[in-house]
Length: 116
Image (tube, rainbow, N blue to C red):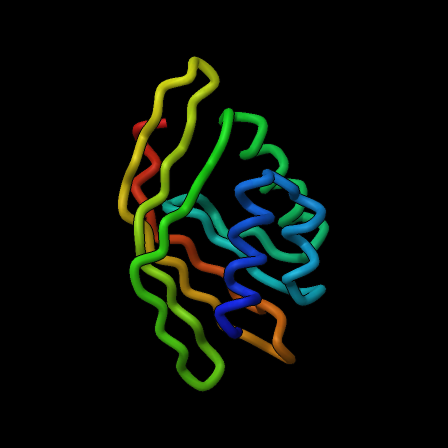
């Protein structure tokens, strides 16, 4: 996954576009957000992401480091969640993307979102 694709992915997340988010995934992708149970399949992931987006007022990532391995990309930085009351929570995150044919097959989000 190149840096341009990563930028487009995080822009889609910032726009809270669950359908657009799904365009980065394989049909049989697996998504795990923090300590929640994994969700399998593009449609189920889009539904779970859309439901999460409804619980927040906004989201913004600042990526500090990106590592590209053969079929894996890792991004590390800070994510700021905007709550519906306008307050913010900023916490460190790391995302691990395991790729297949330039799409995300496994998307693992390491973050402490318990403050939401």
